[in-house]
Length: 348
Picture 1: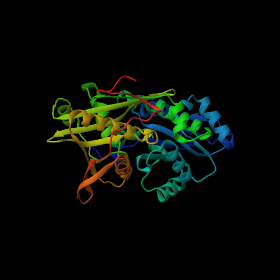
Picture 2: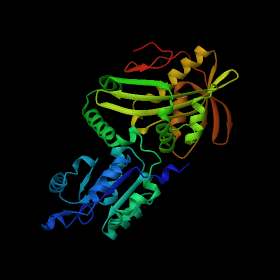
Picture 3: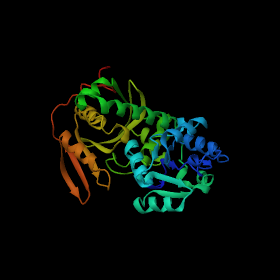
Picture 4: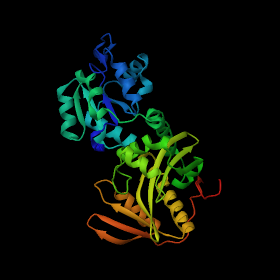
């Protein structure tokens, strides 16, 4: 499978002489670069997010972007007088995505070098290469799923959620109660497989083992009675997060073993991983089995180990960075801010 670090999730564009011909503050007559609108639309169709990092007057630059009819495409734009490296870091924070999934296009060599020096993990391109990037493997997801085609919309909804959260007067759980969140857990079906593969390839921070699976492996697993293979979707009053979680469990003698648990980073602060673990503790109890979990430490997934520990899992085996944990807690209930629809559970 392709390395997730080699797949681009966000493309950041400069404006003057990159998105358009001319320099805004010099009073030039501005025209879009030939074919660049088509490039933006194609990147968006593939589920690649778009943003802006430009040294410019913010109000005038955004007015010009709107005049070209491109404002809907750009998320978390950074327009002002900070270094481009700081702008890109701010975009990464706003979108909650790693810089190793970013690409940056700028016409000025000094700006490209400043970003390369500060963020060597960002892939940097001369603005003149804007047509060519579509043909690079890093910019070509294997599948364009329903969720990837809606990715911009889902991130825009998430930015609105977080903006409201910043102004909310109260604790985190009090805010979560205002969201009217509904979690659905269901067996993986054939129609889910492209999204499932996409999740395993794209998700590394909230991934319990870091393992990826190809389409044929996944297809075999949904027909294997020795496994419990579940996919989770989430929605709230802002809209749908799409399919955001996956768990693969194997039935072994005396135990239900979690071979893989992963969540989209977009639900990191929503308690969804813990809610799925609550469901699995209850499922294992109904099956009369212990619940165990594999954990393979990677450079970015420590939070998953912490999630297991906070839920009441204890290590029973370890070999280097790999360990097996077993659930030793008591009966669990779902958070009161979350309605859960899952096999074997009463309808919310």
